[in-house]
Image: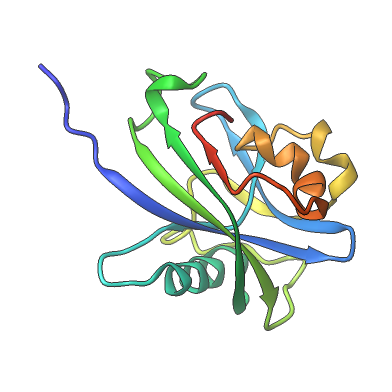
Length: 162
């Protein structure tokens, strides 16, 4: 018997402040990840553009308005092919990563509303692009974000490799 897996889109924000990127910090106690990091953003709702999804998700997760910029890259994530296969929700996502500008300041003590934030989300942090390789960050390809942003020939389709 096969279970039906939905294909879903997700919009993610790459928000920069000079040589730093804004990250969400999580604490996972279910799948053994411990502390981990990700970019703000999330699932697109039916009838919503990717840019509208990005704005809504950032409002929910970081408590700030953003203005979406150019599309940087696209990544697929097929859960059953990665290290967490067999845990959590089986999913197949297509993630669209946009450069985004903060339209309002973020508060250092912002705590996301539990009714709309992701489970385990603990806070926000600015991380140096040079130090991303030291973090437990998902997707792991983001460890090379500084190189991606500075390369004229950077790959725009990441596939399901990270």
